[in-house]
Length: 199
Image (cartoon, rainbow, N blue to C red; front, side, top):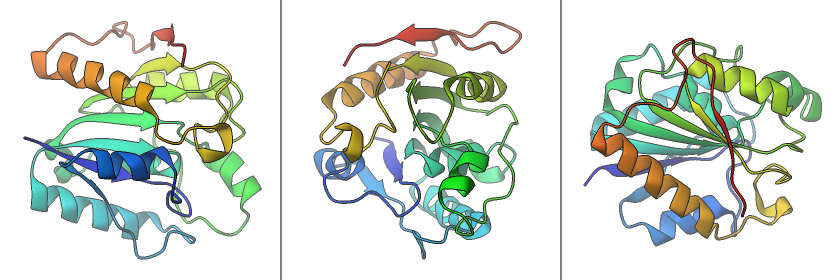
């Protein structure tokens, strides 16, 4: 069975966050630990993720916020060969995140290269960390499917996402399609398909 590597964002995922529940509920899941959750440095975070991928082999990535950008930065790196698929929840926009948390993040530029692994982005229309129009643009550049959760905030504890059972269902469907080798639901020119999902 492939491992599931959980990638929190800035400040980690506090107790009660859906990622913490996921790590406990899934015996194959583990949170990728970072030296500093409060002052993220891209090179350091990448080194930790790549080390885990080399250690565990094939793995699913389940990311939130800044963790989604960490996953996207794997696009051209050798460790990407171990990624079976990426489940990216509420990716943040670096410009907006830096406005909300000035002087904290050293994460370079937004990743825009197509991802070499199947990717599902879960987005919200009222996420203060990412405008939905920009989210659609990044999902398209990554070659990802985009699922629209409507008014769901940053899909975190603050917006009511503790143990997120609908997230498990979405991930299970995504993983099954990926394992079957089902074709991506993406237009050839890289335009993502938006599907409204109620929670």
